[in-house]
Structure formats: C-alpha cells, structure tokens
Image: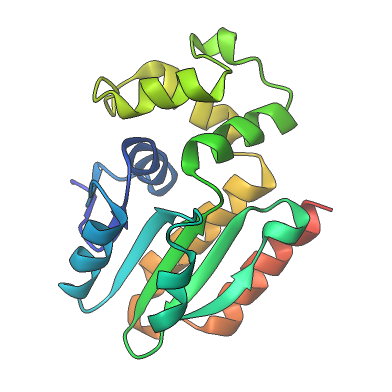
Length: 187
C-alpha cells in the first residue's frame, strides 16, 4: 500500500526527503518555496508545512500563526506554529534544514565523508539544491538513519507522526509535551 501524504508539505528537497523518511512515506507534497508551502497549505483543510526559519520569513509567520513552542534556546532549533483559525501547523527549522542536518550529524560525531557527503555547509547546500538529489540517494538515507537518534530529529519525527495520526483531533498540549520532552533530551 502506498503511503502518500499530500497534506504534509515540506519546502526544499532535503526537507522533503527527511520528512518522507521520518514518516516512512512514499511521497509528501514537496513545494519549492515558503510561499508555495503556505499556498498549498491553504488548499487543504488540515496541513503541516515544514519551512526554513530565516530572517526574511520571521515576521511573515507571526501574522497568522501562534507560536506553540520554540526549541531554539536549548539546541532543538525547531519552532512550532499553529494557524490562528485553521487546523494548519507550521514547523520552522532554524536557520535552514541543511544547517540543521549538519549540526545534528556533528553533535552525534558523525563523519560526513563516511556517507560520501561534504561536511562544508556551502558544498552540502549545493548538493541538496542542485536538483540531483533524489529520494533514492543512499547517502542521505544512511545519514538520516544515523541521525534519527538525535533529540531534535526524534522530536521532529514524534510531532510529525502525532499530527499526521491525529489531524483534526490534535491537542496543542500534547504537541507542547512532545516538544518539552525533546528539549529535556537536549540539555
């Protein structure tokens, strides 16, 4: 049976492949920019967007979204937002997914050359944004498998799985509890 989640909407290639890996999905709804993610979210009754949280976007999120939890002060580097009126959630990775993945690998003392991947952020970004990255790229699958034990990745996976499973019945308190547990692991 195919596992396709069109209401889970990541922004970039690496976001898409990591989220699909974490949810064991065959496909999620990849979009090429934050604006496209937000527009795709509007087309769904329930949706979860995954975007980079960089300086250019910070103010835009605060207009229609309530910050449920911010994990950046204790290394989680993930912000969780809920739309003011819709069952829409936004997960923002600070500053961007590539740096997030590299930092998780570094904190787990993983050597990126073992995976055939560059440890330099610019080179890593060039690879992930070149359009040559595919969901079947074994280098990233191996890396994702090895970073899945990082508290930030575990927390991201738990929140994504919870939102996907509970959709309209999700509880902000349970989401906050999952995030608090992730923060406790990151102390």
